[in-house]
Amino acid sequence: MIYVENLKKEFKKSIKEPGLKGSIKSFFKPNNEIITAVDDISFHVPRGEVLGFIGPNGAGKSTVIKMLTGILTPTSGRCEINGQIPYKNRKNYVKEIGVVFGQRTQLWWDLALRETYTVLKEIYEVDDAQFKKRMAFLNEVLELDSFITSPVRTLSLGQRMRADIAASLLHSPKVLFLDEPTIGLDVVVKDNIRKAIKSINQNENTTVILTTHDLQDVENLCSRIVMIDKGNKVFDGDISELKSKYGQSRELRFVPVDFSAVENLDYKKTFNLSDDDVLVENDGHKVTVRFNSSKVSVEKILNYTLSEIHVKDISVSDADIEEIIKGIYRSEVEV
Image 1 (cartoon, rainbow, N blue to C red):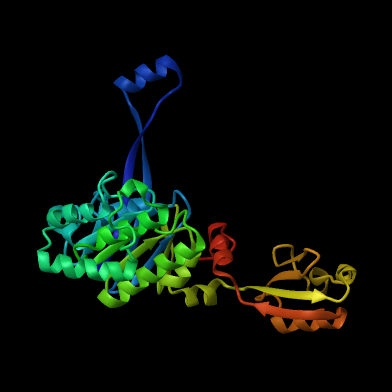
Image 2: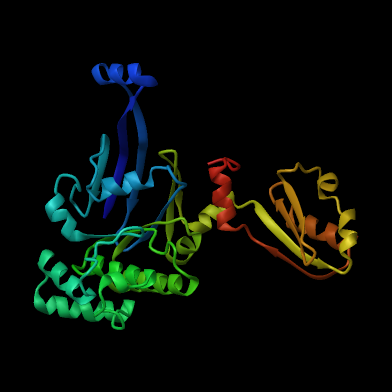
């Protein structure tokens, strides 16, 4: 469905020396620097998959998405989606994709939402029967009925996001690009948006590429993630593989009978651990011990804790995906 091979994008940046003299010099004899935003990225997305495309700010995510949607032309490499090259077959290609940017809207601000969809119907050349069927499906999944007669400018952020997703799906695209679809939304609205995306994917086998900073979006929606940093791909696999490969961090949480007794615990000295391998936090309500399970086993940590202190309650949890990803970005784990 989506093939990305050795994709690279370079930008030319003009370097100006300070002052008026520098400005005049750069005008007649510009000094340019080549910036590599995306460097030799490859991945494949089969039809019907929901792919999480994640990375920190400035990692190159938006540049990749712009090349996949045909807005930018790659410096080198190849991207092909459903047999089409985005930047070469732009007119036909856009009929097969839907794009939603969380910070922008494709809706007409002063038109009623229903009128907006009528305009988009003509733009995408959707026939009357298909449009009626499509709107019935989108109304059911995204619950548009309560505000479909309202002008777009009167919609709440959550309503506008649902309306934007519907607009991007009006022409039954084969691929849906979602850029931060839950940004700024409250917990309930986020959950509704996620359910809608999941329903659309399952009912229509729509391929979805999701870029987000909300890792709950990733865990709830994505079967696989591609992670990039500084223009390079640093991970490509499913979440269970990420946790298995890089999730050495574990958390032991317990409530001691006597909180003052926690001071007697010395995990570093007992197990010869560094500051990076173990961290103890005591907030007066519970004690959290984060430790590297590749350096000391869960069994040893538990046995030591229970032999040294009386506890009311105790639990051990697996690595949290957010902490793993933060660790990869900070180069705390080897990729």
